[in-house]
Length: 109
Image 1 (cartoon, rainbow, N blue to C red):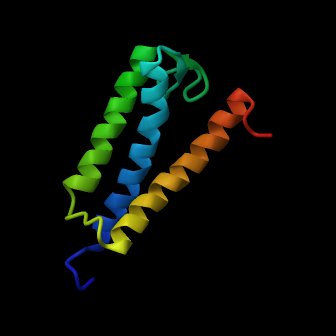
Image 2: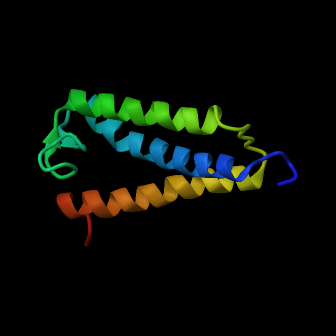
């Protein structure tokens, strides 16, 4: 790419968006004091984890997302390709989470 963006920067931005989107439900539920699904529950991703576990898992996702979008390459919010790839990662993760959590909470009508 002519602007100095390498293909792996776009991959990092995509996954950065996905990790940031995944941080949201865990942080919101954890901060609210509610148990919520996490990879550490039994069964993983379906059983409930404590609010504390969810805050920690959300913080981890936030950290990984930050590293992927701010420390890999030079994310520029004025570049349509950068923002599009970041947004696509976030959108696809949000749709996946809506389907997954919707099946557990009655949200898939």
